[in-house]
Image 1 (cartoon, helix red, strand yellow):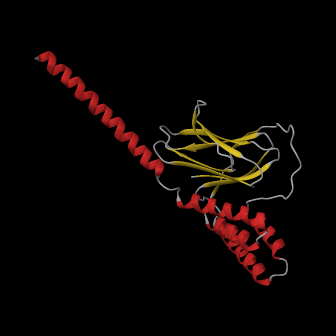
Image 2: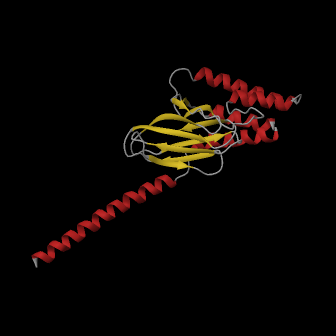
Image 3: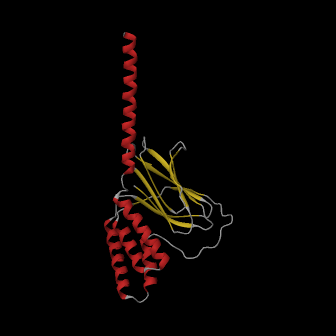
Amino acid sequence: MKKSMFFIFIALSAVMVSCGKSTQANEEKEELAQPASPEISAIRTANDLAKYGYEVESASALIEAANILTGVPTQVLDAQVEQGENQENAIAKGQEKSFSPTALLAAAQEYAGDDVVLLAMAEKVENKMAIMTESARGAMGGPKYAYGRVNAYSYTYYDAKFWANELAEVAVSGDGDTDLDLYIYDENGNLITSDTDYTDDCYVRFSPRWTGLFRIKIVNRGGVYNNYAIVTN
């Protein structure tokens, strides 16, 4: 009888542990299934608008993209540590594209020509940028954001700190000319997550089990360089 009760106790303990792990896993899945944060969603929307604006030479799309980016407070992501140098078989590239609000407005003004309405819209966003820059002196919150270039058939790295048990987000938007892939590694070199589809719009989210530095690797699969924007929460 005692022996039977012992085995029943062991079985119940195993079920309880299993249920506990299952509940934790389900909670993590539910957290990762949530939509992107509002700030990162706004920046990704702006980057999509910028791509469209460059593609069809739409001044209004570029102006709105700059306006959205200007309205999202960000910190500078300045942890770039390495860039691959493989330029084998690289080919010439056409139009230069950048996701910075300043570059977007410059292109918009070029596309606008003599259209006074569009030029006035661009000037309004420029004034907004000046005000935001002035008021943002000192510490600034919000996502970390950067612009960069990854060479043809090459890669670039960033190191960013993420906190334990808090949702981490990384998004990359390229200029549309090549396929970009995104990989996240922990400090031990283990692959945590990735986005390896056939576009240059990448987005990953994960919940670190410990606080530490994580390596963000952006790989360019194409034969020309790619200007990109990267944002982390």
